[in-house]
Image 1: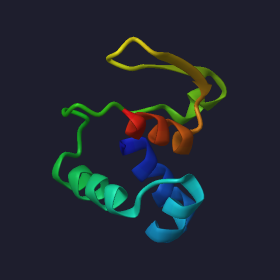
Image 2: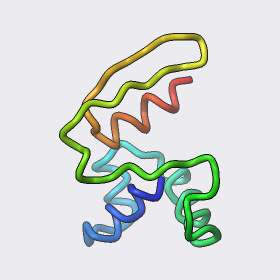
Image 3: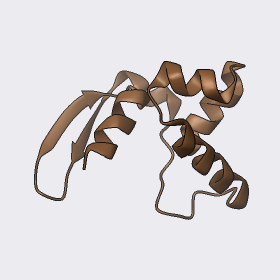
Image 4: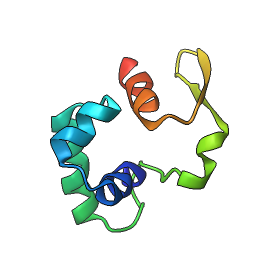
Length: 84
């Protein structure tokens, strides 16, 4: 969440355009944005993804045991997280 907010801020795009290009639900992004203003630190259940690590793979493990290993495409990761 925080990494995507930072990425959007550096992109120079509008929130709507950023969401369209990254496959993010606009309402979800606005929620994340409001939460990021409330909590300037990552003290909640969200973790920051270092942009430098984008070239490595990430493994998503669902509570039912299904494992999916993907490149760190933030748009794809957000879609995979919403699947469960």
